[in-house]
Image (tube, rainbow, N blue to C red; front, side):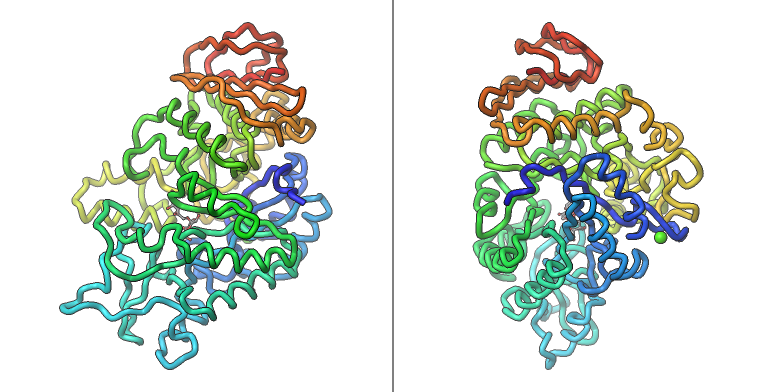
Length: 531
Ligand code: TEU
Ligand code: CA
């Protein structure tokens, strides 16, 4: 039963969602206290970013025990209560499965430092070359080397991410068995499935040096290889024992590679990244002016080339979408326009916490306010290239993942209703203007629009299951139709500060400018849904 084709899924970054015990860190009891908010939004599932035991080098994406809850977030009883309380509201829980790597605090890694232990080759250990050369020339995702020397074992271990995130070696069959057991452990607890972290890089076909690249040298040895498909098929066997769901986070996939991953015997859907690259040059750190037409053409390509898409504009790795794809000057209209895009395309929409109230990028002004390991590592690289401090800050601040990780703004008061303690990451001072409480009573708010469109989608199969028919993808306007049987709905979105004209017509179902009839004229940042 493909419940995930009818549901809207909400992503929670637990550290920043709701603190319940005043330590300034979001936690599971806090999430439970906010389930009515999610029910009101009409979500069918929550993707919970990692809550497992972790030293927090990468805020939980460095796991030291897959079967223990990080005490900062609560207890296993809290987790079981969350699953139960969500279930009472028909909200499924999806766990974040991070199995490309573990923390170097993990028992397996600590044991593997001893060459004679049964865990010796759970990871990739290699000797360096002569005169201290690293085992190969690969470069990592966080801008640093991929090899760290361990003085105990006197060898290097591979880490494509932070140095305390050691890559697991799937050439060792014991590793996959351990992972299958971890899936069963959580499926037996009643979770509905998993969001699979960087799942298309699990299999490394060799550790040979690769062709020099500007980023990710060596990625031809692990990106979307056949070995990864073999692993996914063995994970799917366990998922099928429980009728469970899996969405893959698949970096750099093409539609063709995505199709090869989205199959009965592998993943249900994948997050692609291409539409998130329309405001950058070769790397996300080198921003360029957002190009709406490229964005529309990319979305159209993926709508046509994939039977089913995971739809997203924000997550815990991406800056906020209104300043990026919309307009700060037209904050409310463009926030609603982006919501309309997300909730009327074909696929499963993912709403990231705070997106439903139009939260914006952080208001920090210096590096020491940041937490994100990726931002800190990249800043070190820029420093090595003698980039001056002001320019370093400009490059980092526009792209840093911390933009999406500032605490949820529930209300305008001290602590924004997130905490009455000292928050682990700064709360945006705009919480006076942007917060849920001030929007709940306002029928014209971004929050009200998300709720309304969520219901519109729930009540109209054409939005959930209809086909996608492209109409216009120009400098300003993106227009498309959704068709199911006799139902033909048109969506027209003006991604610009200037009025626009479109040829499509119809009765107005919704307009974010409150228009009652439609004559083909779209105001700045106007979104219309026509029938
Ligand atoms: O992200 C994988 C990843 O490649 C992103 O970090 C990407 O490089 C970039 O940040 C977005 O363009 C996953 C998790 O989502 C991320 O939070 C983790 O840091 C990473 O894997 C390691 O687990
Ligand atoms: Ca807390």
